[in-house]
Image (cartoon, rainbow, N blue to C red; front, side, top):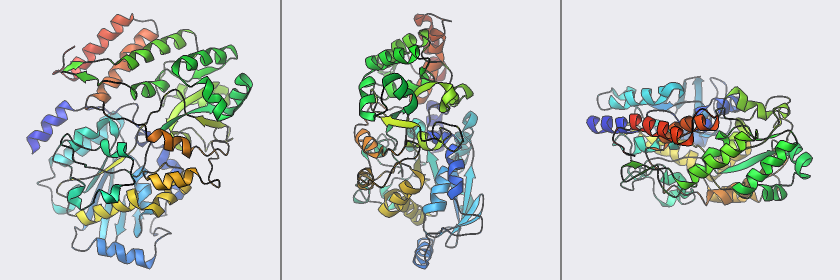
Amino acid sequence: MKKRFLSLLVAATMVVSMFAGCGSKDNAAENNSSNSNTAGTTNTSTTQEAGNQAADNTADQGKVLNIYAWNEEFKSRVTDFYPGYEVVDNTHGKIGEVEVVWNITPSDNNAYQDNLDAGLLKQESAAADEKIDIFLVEADYALKYVDTPYTMSIADLGITDAELAEQYQYTKDVVTDSNGVLKGLSWQGCPGALFYSRAVAKEVLGTDDPAEIQKYVSDWDKFVETAALMQESGYFMTSSVMDTFRVYSNNVTSKWVEGGKINIDANIMKWVEDSKKMYDAGQTGTHGLWSDDWNKGFYPEGKVFCYFGPAWLINFCMAADVEGSIGNQGGWGATEGPQGFFWGGTWICAAAGTDNAALVKDIMLKITTDPEIMKDIVVKTDDFVNNKSVMNAMAADTSYSSKVLGGQNPLAMYCKGVESIDLSNLSNYDSGCNIDFQSAITNYFEGNATLEEALDIFYQSVAERYPELGY
């Protein structure tokens, strides 16, 4: 088993995508920390019945539940919403008689995956209390883990298809292995939308109504035309060309690797064409996501019209809690944009060899399928949860709205978008190819290389990363 896993690790992407979700940032944790319980307390929703239930779930189980993650997001969901969870300190908790240990390693420089890999490789020989029980993965590298025997199937945990009927199909596809076996679950869905500055929309386009704004961004050609209008009024259409890449790349009709050779889809080349035109016209930049320059557009003085992202971006990553930001003033609006897409997400995997299978099962079921808990997550955190009935009800709930979006309820838009997500072209090569392509093509955008030279840089980079591929 170790040899197989090691070979898969070599073939898999060993870098964290710069376009991984907010799960790769600590913003969500910082914003959720205000909702977290203080050390030594128990979840406020906990009742005696929940405590008894937690004790039942830990009967005949291991004494320690080890959870591996890259930030505090999943921890905050368990701490705030799992019945019977008791906080001990920042890295420890209790569920019944089981000690919960949080092993959190940031994703920077691939540190999280390296730490997880080391732990999984020792899983068979590890002492019971040191075995990994739960670990978290992101979409960009999920297949690296679910395509190994180090992850348990959901069915082997005793979770049935009927219990997962309300989950969005794409969230299952991400963590389904090459044999069609489901090996992880998520509590959230991450369909994306276009977030625009209402003030800029009114000034340049004469309206901030989402339906009217959509007419200006309904396809990529209109999007580029609107960028010219923004420029004439002194605004950037987007902060960076990198803002749109994920939208284009989510709508490809082929994989990065076809027949053992590197393949560049037509929609990726459409991104190159449109981005070059906008960059040359001064309508966008080339800086990376999460950079200081990229963040400037969260404030009025940044003069950026729009960003693309899912619910977690607008709620947790766009400085909504900072006085003077556009989000803090409720100044963003949301519309569908040129194409549907998704970005990020966090999946819960059960490590093979866990001695806490019953408890792992219960955590998965409570956090990813319980409708009351999932509605509570939406109301308290503005997350988009992985439950069709809950989200459809919330989308129709006139009492629900987003302060960041100026009182708009965007959930119907997300619900529509999530159903169109197609992961048929997902592959193990996505993360590395995406990073290498954007890095190489930036040379072309900035005038440091011709398109042909930039593509050659890309091919060489991928060949070094994946020696088995041709082009």
